[in-house]
Amino acid sequence: MAAVQQIGIGVIGCGMISNTYLPNLTQRYGAVKLVGVADLVEEKARKAAEKYNCAFMTNDEIYNCPDIQIVVNLTNVWSHHEVTKAALEHGKHVYCEKMAAETFEEAKELYDLAKEKGLMFAMAPDTFLGGGYQTCRWLIDQGVIGEPFAADAVIIRNYSVTGPTVRKGNVNSEGGTIPFDMGGYYIHALQCMFGPVKRVGGFARWMKKEYTNPKNPKWKEENVLKSPNLIVGTLEHYSGVLSTLTAGDSGVMNNKEIPGIWVYGTGGTLFCPDPNTFGGPVKIFKPGYDDYMEVPLTHGFSGLDKMMRFGPAPANEDFMVTMWADSRRGIGVGDMCWALINKRPARITNEMGLHSIEIINAMVQCTKTNKIYEMTTKPIRPVALRAGFMAADQEAVFDDYWDETVDTTPWWCK
Ligand SMILES: NC(=O)c1ccc[n+]([C@@H]2O[C@H](COP(=O)([O-])OP(=O)(O)OC[C@H]3O[C@@H](n4cnc5c(N)ncnc54)[C@H](O)[C@@H]3O)[C@@H](O)[C@H]2O)c1
Image (cartoon, rainbow, N blue to C red; front, side, top):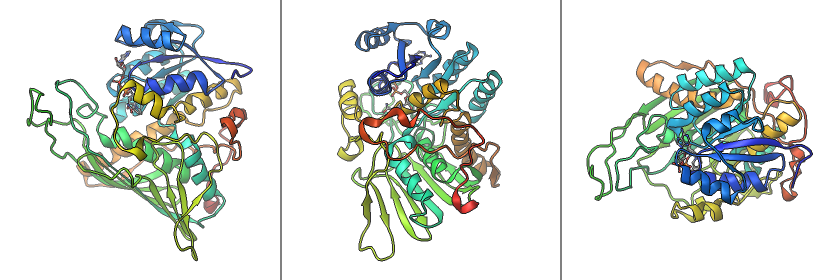
C-alpha cells in the first residue's frame, strides 16, 4: 500500500509498544514512510531497523535527517519532554505517546514551542479515532440516545513494581501513575464525544504502595510515589455534559467486564467500549428494549484488541506483535501524514493532549486548594472521521481537507 505521497517518519524508542507501532506504521498506513529508528539501547534500535527494513539511527541523526518530517516519540514518559523538545527545536512535527510530559507545566512548554514554530504536536492516545469511539460519536451526533447529559468513566487496575530490581518504571515516575498513564484514554474519548472541559472538581490520593517481589532488595518497603495513584473527579464540559472519571491502581477489575464508559442521554443509554482499544462492543439501551443491543460499527479501523478480553498475558515482544497487531495504534500518525499532504490540521490537535494532562493536574490542584479548577486550555471538539469506509481500513477517510473554521459544536448546543 503506497499513497500518492509519503511522509518520512523517524521513531525514537524501540521498546514494548514499538512492537505494535512498527508493524502498523509499515503495513497499515500508506502515507507513512518509516525512515529510521533510534533507542538509547543501541541493540534495540539495530534489531528494529533490521526487522522493519529502515535505517538504524541515533536520536541526533533523526533530528537532523532532512527526509524525516515527523518524529514519533515512543520513549518512556520521563524522556518525552527531552525528546519532543529536541525534535521541535529541529523543526520536526511530533507524535508523542502519552502523557505528553511528566507535568502539565512541561507539557505546556512543549505546546508553546510547537505553536511558536508552527509545528504539529499530537499526543496519544489515538484510540478515539478507531471504529469503536467513532461509532459512539456518530450515534451521539445522530441523536440516537437523545441529548447526552452525563457519563461515567472508570479504570481500576493493580499497578505495582513486580520486577526483581529497583529500576525506574512508570509506577514510580512522575506522570506515570494510573491517572496519567491510563486517564488520557478516557479523557480523549470524552473530548471526542462531548468536546472540551470548562471546569474540574476532584480529589487525588496517594495510596500506599509496597515493592511486591520477594527478590527485589526493597521487598515490602514502601514505594514512594511522585504522583497520585487515585483520582476521582467530575468534569463539566462546555457542552453541558457532566462526566466523572475514576482512575485507581490499587484494586482488581474483572477483565471480562470491559472497563468502558457509560453515556446517559434523554432517550437512551450508550455503553462505549474500553477506550484503550480500537473496536467495540458498542451497545445501546432505549425505552422498550429488553436488554442492551450491540450496534454494528459504522467506521473502520476497529482492530480486535483481544488483550483486554483474554486477560493478562506475558508482556513480551511476541505477545505484543501477535495480540496487538490487530489494533490500529498509529492511526494518529497516519492522520498526521495526511494532514501534511493535504495541508490541513491533524485530528489530534496540539491542545488535546495538553487538555488531558491539565484535567488530571486539575484534580491534584482541587485537592490542594479546596477549589473548583477553571481550565485554561480549550481544544476544539475533534473532527469526526467519515462513516462507512469499512473495508480494509480505507485511508480515504484521511484524504480530506478541514480547518479550524469547521463547526464541531454538538447539535444539542446549537
Ligand atoms: N507497553 C504498553 O502496553 C503501552 C501501551 C500504550 C502506550 N504505551 C506508552 O508507550 C511509551 C513507551 O512505553 P513502552 O512500554 O514501550 O516502554 P519501554 O520501556 O518498553 O520502551 C521505551 C524505550 O524507549 C527508550 N528510551 C528511553 N528514553 C530514551 C531517549 N531519551 N532516547 C532514546 N530512547 C529512549 C528505552 O531505552 C526503551 O527501549 C510510554 O509513553 C507508554 O506510556 C505503552
